[in-house]
Image 1 (tube, rainbow, N blue to C red):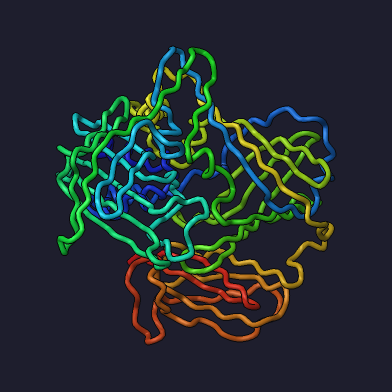
Image 2: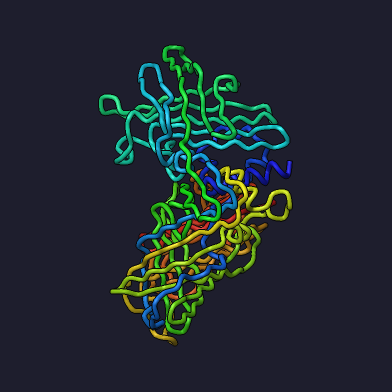
Length: 492
């Protein structure tokens, strides 16, 4: 069981953290609880990584003072093997590019699918098969469950076909779901078909990742709509030359590695006394939010080192992450770059390396099919733009209108937790507690507060004085019309 869980942890990491839980969330609910938990692990973070800065021209560290806004980032993975070999093209095997062949769709809304994401894991003779098919690129950040009329991505091809499939013989499960999303006469329509026990009709080759579907027949509950899926999809191949670094494309390294993702934005405030703030803004299913992290920084004429101070929600104590980057400032633009040892990077967040039989290279071979690995390197680059100066040392503090929300402490908690926040200016404040379903649980504060540090305590009860059950809860703090969110975990 431990080895299966460790393998699934690596799978979730390679597919971009808990995004695989979105891709297969209906089927994952059939798995044991301890396996479901592995799919919720956080995606890789660029922090706490011993970077090796690239060589840069000499710079003046004073150029770094002020406020910087995130613009763009990019990461490239390079793998060096000691053996000449051919592997399935990761870009095609993970839904970034069309694969060879097609899965035909015969029914009321006929079409075909030519994008695939597939992986086969063999544990003690039992195969765990993951597969997604679509007629559009398969993006883990994209959750088709929440598409609505007028919310389709501009480059999406309609009708949108999507199939997800898992086969897990060790737990007696195989099946999945087929979806069609379209607009008919200007109206949004969607059709879903679930299926089980289809191992004879859906096969995935463990070496080539070739997917074959033979007469998979799907019918809705009313029996008035039937689709038949048949065909083959196979990723192309890439050649690896012994001793030569080969670039490996993967959705994780294209989009998910870095300080921000999706619709998030980020600002750095770097003060001349070596302190600063990292402020990340974003939106989720519930509301807009912000996360402010204190940092310390130091720089030479070609590299900068950050120490990020944060509160670990899971373990319940303060921690620090350190990263070093090469930098270059040109015309109000800050370029940052570094070279990371991929396996050393993974060791910060995942525990598989405690097991000699599942070291980093073995796990990577399992994901991409590359054998005799000698080195795995990740090159990272990020660009930020200068937005203005900050206060000098001795005058550091929240600027007028600024707001800083700290994490609740302790977290997890029982029976009480305290939420701290700082006001840069006086203004209206409301603080409410919600459950993960979006239901309001408790109103903690509603009024005007002066500048400075404030705190509010929650005793795990609702507005009626009833004690709440274990689970995740959200503090929503509205300040001057803007909402900030912090999460807390109640354990009883």
